[in-house]
Image (spheres, rainbow, N blue to C red):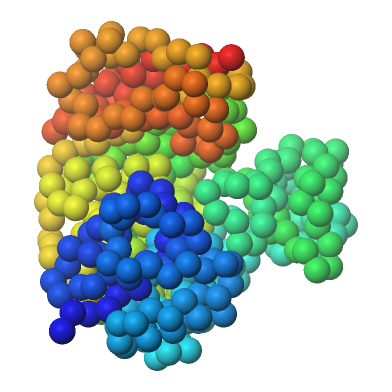
Amino acid sequence: MPRNVVFAAPFPAEVTHRFARAARDLDDVRLLGLVHVPPGEPGPYQDVERVSDPLDANALARGVEALARRHGPIERVVGILEAIQVQLAEVRERFDIPGTRPGTARLFRDKAAMKEQLMRAGIPVARSRLVRSLSEARQLADEVGFPLVLKPPSGMGAKATFRVRNDAELTAAVRGLAVGPDRPSLAEEFLTGREHSLETITTGGRVQLVSASRYFPSCLEAVENPWIQWCCLLPRDISAPQYVEARALGERVVAALGLHQGVTHMEWFLRDDGRIAVGEIALRPPGANISLMTGLAHDMSMYRAWARAEIDGAFDGPYARRYAVGSAFLRGLGRGRVLSVEGVSKVHDRVGARVVEAKLPTVGAAKNDSYEGDGYVVVRDPDTEVVKAALTTIIDTIRVRYA
């Protein structure tokens, strides 16, 4: 008998379908979709149930019940969207389905509770406070100084995140986020230094794989400057002291938050004085093509590795890190619709042999306000410096124009 696995995918994004197809292709899996927007045909699912509110645990539970009536007992409930991890954990608990429970999921989702837990474990994080008024935000500013960062406690992907440099900007950010007694915001020290990420795969309570990347420039700078063409790099060699220390920190973070199995994405900063601080960690695969690049760096499929961990509780590694990989994200000045994409043929001539995947901006499409921009180019080579040079060529040569 096939195993009934429910994959919650509110919207039919291509990256979501990569994970869904990996889950579908495991041995003896019948993949059932829990969706808000139908995936279209053929789609990765053998059956789907639509839910009116994909962020509501009760609506998700009703969807799981409907699928169970049609196909029998549900063995796993999974999904990659950060905003529904707590709700999925609540559904698992309600039906006694194996997987992460709500207490752990909430620690990953609530950034204020997360940082309190990490500080109790002695893990270096940005000094922060949950604030419910301008005066409380000013108290933290008096303690740690400007700049500060203000963001929702359950934010993700640098969305609704404000860097504030002085009291006037702090006042504007508090008003913009509508901070109040019933709408707290997380105010925290602005971490400076080189921003990196750390990805982990955990099974049986043990971290099985660690991968690291670096952002050029930081994600927040990319959000604040929507014209910047920025890059994410996975260096081939992560044996330098800062990566060894970051790995140890990442393993401590996973343990402190009580994760038994799954994939995480952690932001960390290498400060100018050489110290490392953890930004935050999410209970989900990474965005910004990092899942794709992690697979390319290790000659494996990160999508399948996620599915094996979440559904089978298994890990097929270890995997050697054979390549450096990078993504350049394509954006430009202006607003409106994409008018032209220039310099593509020059990039092809110069670094085309190292390109493994590309999605060019679509002429006529509306500008994407996401920090990932309107397109990307992914390159790979055994030599990290070759990949860095290729990324520089891409962002210096391709120009996206809007009208």
